[in-house]
Image 1 (cartoon, one colour):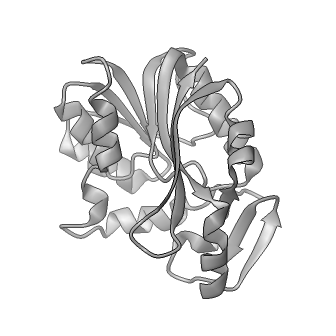
Image 2: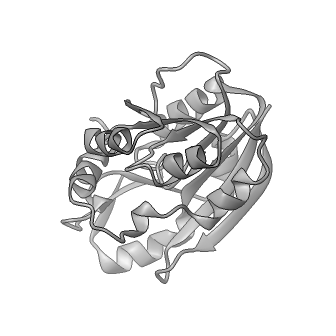
Length: 214
């Protein structure tokens, strides 16, 4: 069974995105991270959606490539111009080894089971140059009680849950982890920053992390 199926949901979302959507504005963490990077650095926006980060980073002078499994998202980025955008899967990146200075993946790589996640992190490590950084988010296991209180759910494999929540991406597999599991997955990286943070909705805990490729 394929676990990384959430792009089916997001393809529909990107096809019908409304003006003023939060998915059109860059995250403050991404803006802060970018200020620490060498001007002109080559960045992969992995799971770029409709390009809120890729397009903003390109405007700041970075050399940006955007990749998403959603054709609707990629089309939106291409139509906006100035950023190379590709359709592809996160666990099989179509890039050469050591070809990026940095990788960004915001609210993306946890959409799958542990095997998909491990392959994806291995691919991120492969395409990053030594000393390059990865900025991303993961779902915290602290979030699970909140999700289970709202929706009927089941664990389909280790740490991987689906929920009876029609109209949301929660019907697709999501991976939740504690700090130990997160660090095990990111073997080959050194922690630069790690925070378990609640987002705007109560109970919406995410790990925020910056990792350096060893």
